[in-house]
Structures are given as C-alpha cells and as structure tokens.
Amino acid sequence: MEKFKRLKNEGNDFVKTGEYEEAANKYSECMKLNTEECTVYTNRALCYLKLCKYEEAKRDCDHVLQIEDSNIKAFYRRALAYKGLQVRKKNMAGI
Image (cartoon, rainbow, N blue to C red):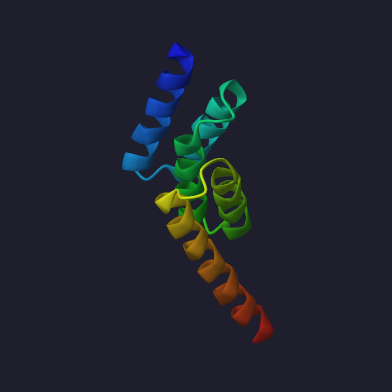
C-alpha cells in the first residue's frame, strides 16, 4: 500500500507540472497494485483528456462508474471525453 501511495503522489506531482503522459504512466502503475481505487482512474482520465485521448478517458470513467455509480468526477470527465470525441468526429467529417 505504501508503494501505491508513493506512485499516486508522483502522478499527482506530474499533473501539477503539466506532465500528463508521465502522470498517466504513474496512475497506470497504481492500477496494477489496486484496481478498485477510483481516484487513480479519474486522475488518469484527466491526463487522457489533456492529451486528447478521449476514448481512453471515457473508458477509465466507465470503469469508475461501474464501481461507484454516482462518482461526480467520472461523470464530468466522461462528458468531456464525449465532447472531445464529437468534436473530433465533426473535424473528420470536414476532411
């Protein structure tokens, strides 16, 4: 559990400095230790949103909502992911 906290804190520090790819990697390492901790999924979803990886963000939020069906961050970030996917779809239609 100590390693989990350390990795999560490292991920949080990367988010604060805008290093979203590195943060996502730290959160992914956390998930190997604990698949039920929802905060690392919502945190990684934030990173994916910043990296325009909307499908991945949506998937993380869907996972959280299966565990906690009223998680506000997961709902909000999933909505942002859907919005990003819609914008991308519209842009692709214009090509």
